[in-house]
Length: 241
Image (cartoon, rainbow, N blue to C red):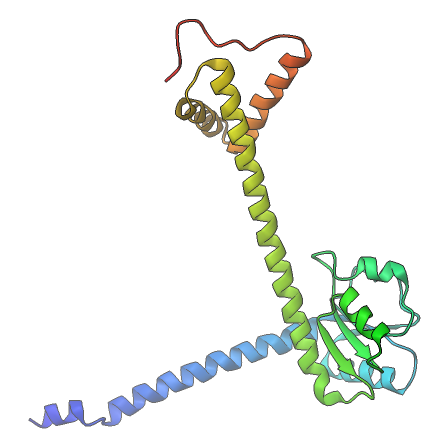
């Protein structure tokens, strides 16, 4: 009886289990926070800002964090390709080449705009540059790390998303190539679609190659025959079903 009471009474064992779960959850959150800070500390940062008090405050704050910081003004265009993040002062006139080089390439840096006035020109520059974070002047160190972390996260997400899109596009392109090769085999070799597909698949397996690679060879062979004025006629006597 006492054992039953112990099972239903929420005794020490239950408390220990709850404590372990709570500590585990907190530990997971702490690990995630440490990873974010380590990512920021390892970042190579360009501070593209006029050499004034705000620029010095920003650069020194990032150095205290542990970042590898470079300073440059005027803004180099295109931006260096060996930086992970750029704190970019938004002025009324930015080099046109800069807008073409920022935010368009998957491997480009995270951009944090440093804005003095919310003028139409500044707002347009923020949109055109596809910035990942914004901080306002006069600068305060309190909001810098938040925008820095957000910008790095957004840039990483964009890069991963672009990679998935490219992979999907390649898959769709390969599928179209295979479909065209199957159609050629059906029309010119007298095969049905299933037999044509199996032929390409088996050849790809034998060569340890992609289906699209074998399909491209089929298409190229057909195009070569056409250029030579030759026809790829189906064999006499029926289909390859």
